[in-house]
Length: 202
Image 1 (cartoon, rainbow, N blue to C red):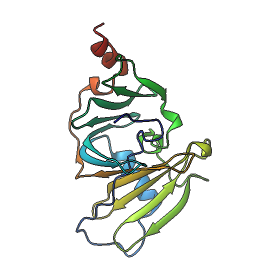
Image 2: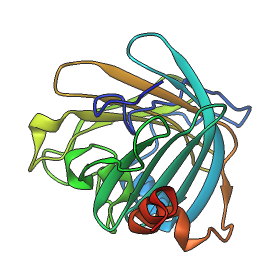
Image 3: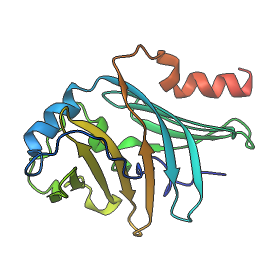
């Protein structure tokens, strides 16, 4: 399955609930910002539900700020972000990826070096369903690129899913397993030029 820009990094994590004690109200935005700012490296299996209903699985690697990698199972499809760029590698191509700036995807909000969900115009919804906190956010400087919906569970705070809604209203949902934080992740996982060279034999 070829990922389009619309589906990319949009994998919203289908809502996974964990058996932690529920807060009486939504986790404050300042606490969520602090959690994301403290998240340096993490990896997790994921399930991605695309806007057309198709489902993919794989492993996601996060290295804040600015780096993420989606390795898809059973398909030579790879999505990585590094150096301010996003690259989509399709094994059926010639080794050259589709590329565009990371700032053009709402996932940048999670990967930013200084996450501030309390910033004016950033959050349009901040709610609590009795178990988890839901935050809908968009870049106030680029509201036309779409939004990201993040779901967090408490005690301790953990990101459980995100849904990216593109400018056309299409959703991509990704479901995270348990995040393994603090692992050492090779720098080459986020090096777009090195990946291109490996695939083209340069």
